[in-house]
Amino acid sequence: MSPTLGLFGLNMNTCADPGAAARIAALAEELGYDSLWTADHVVLPSPRDAVSPMDPDEPILDPLVALAHLAAHTERIRLGTGCVVLPQRNPLVLAKQLASVDVLSGGRLVFGMAVGYLEPELRALGVPAAGRGARADEYLRAMRSLWHDDEPAFHGRHVDFAGVDTRPRPVQTPLPVVVGGHSRRALRRAARHGDGWYGWLLTPDEAAHHVAALRAVEAEEAEEAGEAEEAGEGRGPLQVQVTPRRRIDAAAVRAYGEAGVDRLVIVPPRSAPLEELAAFVEANAPARLGAARLDLK
Image (cartoon, rainbow, N blue to C red; front, top):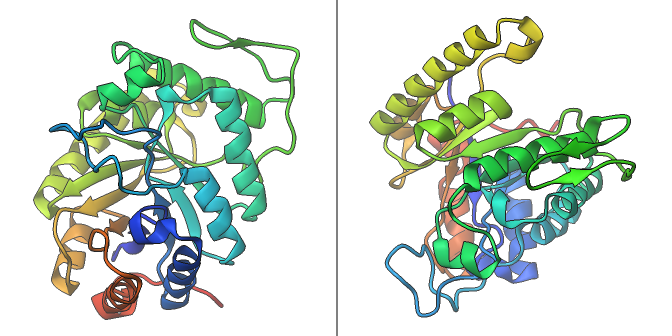
């Protein structure tokens, strides 16, 4: 089956301008892209260090604020975070923000989360790099209680609350969660806590390797859980999102589909001017590349 196409970086560089972001979002929806994705960095090392993905003076809007803006300029296309660095966010505040975007968009949000790797950013936000995976797992469980429990409560090492509630709840029940990361721990986190997995800058062969590892971890989790409800009865295999390592063509789309990828989230040229960015979106439209198209009927 052919994957769908998403578009990454709708809060960065050229798309940090609200008019440009609105134009590209509307164009992507018209052309049949199935999703728009925003990146997350609260702060960046200055001067830039070897592991930082961006220069500190590159503009990047908050991913949730940007998605609320995009929701107002689109109707059907899915809106995803790719990915929010969960350990460095207050989980109760983030739960409120995500529920709000899901409501404002009419139930189109996909919550992509990861544990992060940029230690200067984590440190500046007061979060130790050590133990960030366990912190993220706890945050997610606490957020889901706020979203879906009749009487939200959570008692953990990093989050502790009861006797509180928040409205409105997300439109989607459950709100879909996609877990990013290439490590075995990330794959297990996706299988245990997520509805999907996100791989970043992978070739088709690399994607096939990670998908096979993900399916094996899913099977292990289902066997360990034993009970069908614990293993996710009726959920089916996790959805796989991948950002390709290189520019794609129709043959590459087929190769990623054969590798088990459900959605390709492509990255436009970095800092391209608006007209060049629009031309890229048109040139890589799903119909041109043989990808599955968002049904706008």
